[in-house]
Amino acid sequence: MRVAVIDGQGGGIGKHIVEQLRKRMPELEILALGTNALATGAMLRAGATEGASGESAICFNADRVDLIIGSFAIMTVYGLLGEITPAIAAALSLSKAEKILIPIQRGNIRIIGTNRIPLPHYVESLVNEVEQRVEQKKE
Image (cartoon, rainbow, N blue to C red; front, side, top):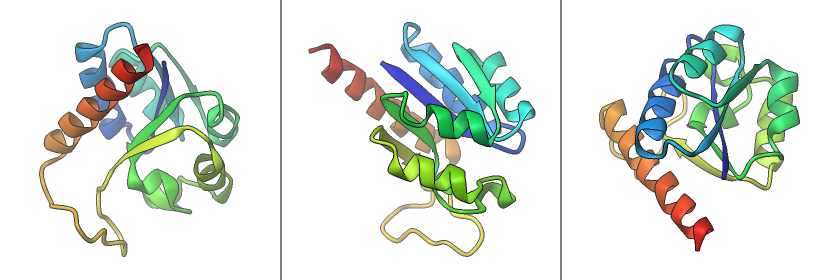
C-alpha cells in the first residue's frame, strides 16, 4: 500500500504521523509530500520512504497513492496559512484515494461532532485506521 502524508509549514504534524506509521508498519511505503522543502525534509527524516515538495509534486501524486493522510486543512483552499493552493485542494479532493484527515481546527472552520483532544491522540487514531486499511488490503 502506498500512503501519502501531506503537510506544510515546518512539517511537524506530518513528521509525527510518519514516525508513528513507521513504528507500527515498517514495511509501509510512505510518500512525504510537503508544500515546501522544510516540511518534506522533516517527514523524510522521520522515516518516509521518499518525498517531494511543492504544488506540482502534490498534484502529480494525488492519484498515484492508495491513501492520503494529513490535517483537514490540506483539503481547504489556502489552508495551512495559505500554503494549500486551489490546485492542491482540487487535486486532493478529486483523487480517488481514500483520505484520512485529522480534524485540527484553526482559522474560521469548526468541525462539529469532533472532540478537541491533543494531537498525539488524533495521530494514534489515524495510525489505527491506516493499520486497518493495510490489513484489509492484504486479505
